[in-house]
Image (cartoon, rainbow over all chains, first blue to last red; front, side):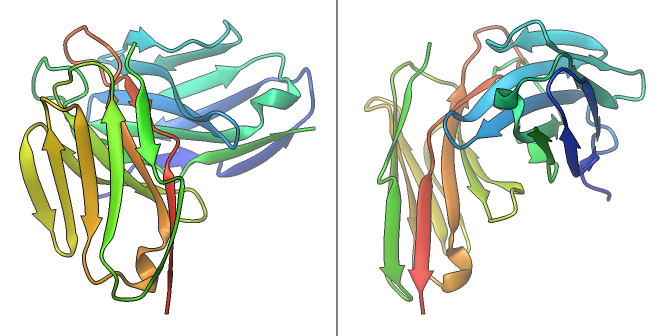
Length: 117
Length: 112
């Protein structure tokens, strides 16, 4: 069973550019959530998609956006990149089985490491 | 908003030692997650628990809902256990959302 696949694994951008990251969940998983990890702030929730709908959003500016396709694959986009956007971006998928918040096992991808120069 | 505190931040042990990592949170939860992150970034979900205790190999996780506290224990620690261990709790009230709030992590180094 293939795991969660994130592409690209590494990328370097310059300030002002935009970037798109992709996440392919485990087959059958309909929930995809995105997280940002930095040395200073640790892991922070960005947003979560379920059946192509954004279910929740973290406290990030509007430059951060995402979407989910009908095959559950998800993309996140960061526009007008800033130096502070340099981070490891992780996505996770889960087989949502009930309505209880945060009570589903997450499977994480290896992450996309973004460096903004 | 749930606040998550982990201790210690850093932990160095000798191979074979018994390890305990603690996690406290401020708001009642439905479940708590323990995650492991090795150098390089990949995160693995170790446990998700809502009550009592769970065991997987040499790892044991416990949770006390009344005290809002969880512990992760590693018995007979090994250098391959060296990693960052992260505690996470739900951060949303709406049903089914996977929004999590994370602790800062505990960096464990096990020396041979």
